[in-house]
Length: 281
Image 1 (cartoon, rainbow, N blue to C red):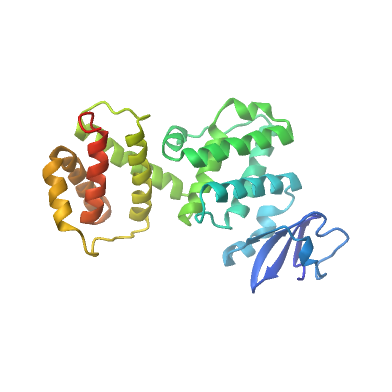
Image 2: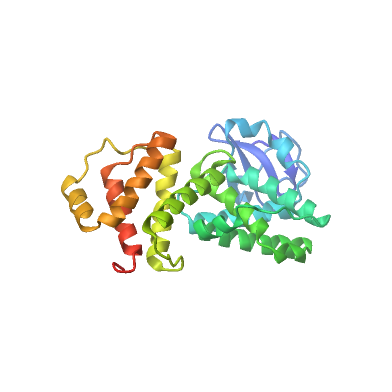
């Protein structure tokens, strides 16, 4: 494998299966220059680059300390363990760039306020917990204890992970959060009951809402698939109050996004809502 770019002694850009990749390994580029071959057995990790990312490698990764790459790799490895099959390799570039910018700002005493933090904690607890571990590593490695004083940065790292799950641009996490918040607002005003957000049934509903919201944003519409009409009618009859709320969500998505919610999806949402109501839980 031939070196096309050297980022530092441990990280290079090379080609694998006709695609540009970030290759990591201890001493991988030591004493090497562009065009030299590298030993495959020294490579510990690969991250595949998308076409548009290849041209931005120098811009994004130039001058980034090796410790940042190690922290980034640790975050992605943990994310892949906690969220299997959802994390895109392209997260490496954007996250390394973000973490480096974070530590540079923190060295100057600046921490950016994350206005989506409350929703991120509520909707994406797994991603947020990974962000917390990442911030602890950044704080420890660069001696930045004040980074631990707030959860803002953990929230930003969580957003990067969510964006990778969706496989879309940087606005994806905020779009997803906004859509979930809109639908939860409909639920709270429609059901007219105090909802315990620590309740296991509410947490399950939020998890379902997350995956449903992803499908809405991706315009993954399953309404043309065959639905179980008998089950749908039975659920409507058994849980009329919950279905009334489901109908409001259906109308909201139709009016604001032109999204048609399938009967199967309406059934699932109604069942989740019924479990939230005190008399049904």
